[in-house]
Image 1 (cartoon, rainbow, N blue to C red):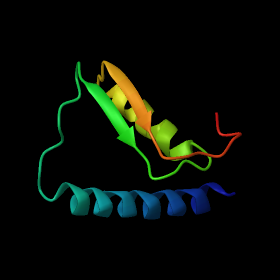
Image 2 (image 1 turned 180 degrees about the vertical axis):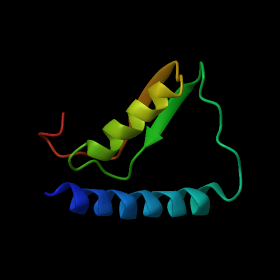
Image 3 (image 1 turned 90 degrees about the vertical axis):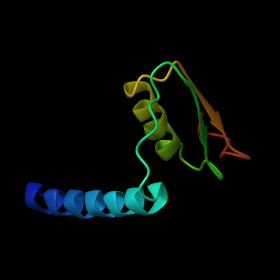
Length: 78
């Protein structure tokens, strides 16, 4: 993929993520994760990519421990 096309896709995806963050957070500030146990809940893990990124973000924000909870996942995900 060309750099310009990649940049366009990235901008579109970032805008969508920011809109979702605004919607889901409802004006509330981000909760500090430093030193906390964080539980990432997913309604089902297919590839694990979203859950993996969520865990990485929680760790980067200082979570003491990160736990993933999901009702099911694809057998070859982990």
